[in-house]
Length: 258
Image 1 (tube, one colour):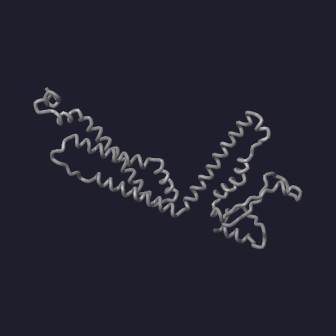
Image 2 (cartoon, one colour):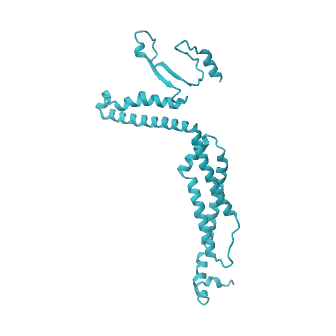
Image 3 (cartoon, helix red, strand yellow):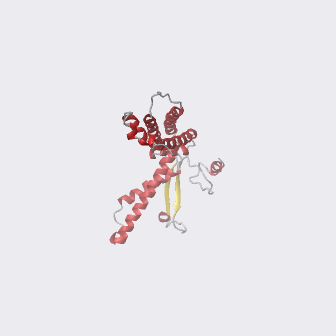
């Protein structure tokens, strides 16, 4: 606000130029930037060669300086580069051609970086987009919470349930929470969560809590399945052997300690 007031005090609508003192100023309107790239005195003879002009459109880009920079690059640099075919001596040697390829690759990466920063910055201010992402995360929170509540509830078991049913139960639980863990760890999910981190969304507190619980439950299921599988060779004969064959098939059940 102080910088804006200093700008307002210096601005005179009857003058065509404004010289700032270097303080930060919000560019909320169209502005023309006048600059020179060489440390030479400007005169009437060289003003056309030494002085450069560019437009900063604060209205079109919503005062977003990153968006303005990308717009300038796209119109002032990217378009001429894409049309340029002659590069002087660089096009005549293999070394020069390699330098051109390297320059083009590096410039494309930089332009994509600025474009991505511009898109993320614009999305950060998009209230509709923020609400949609928060709505999706709230639905995920409810589904994870429902699964956690079901996991913690007491199981109703038949008195004739055998050990293999116990193994199958924990295998299903492991598959269920492993699927949840893979989802919360996926790149698409992390992208939305990182976006909400930029907006300081309050839904992240519950999300982080649920993610930690999913990881804990998944690890518990892994331990239980691994433990129960160690008894698989002892439990399986109970389902297929007759009482007469059982002592022969599973002698370990009848081993007496000395």
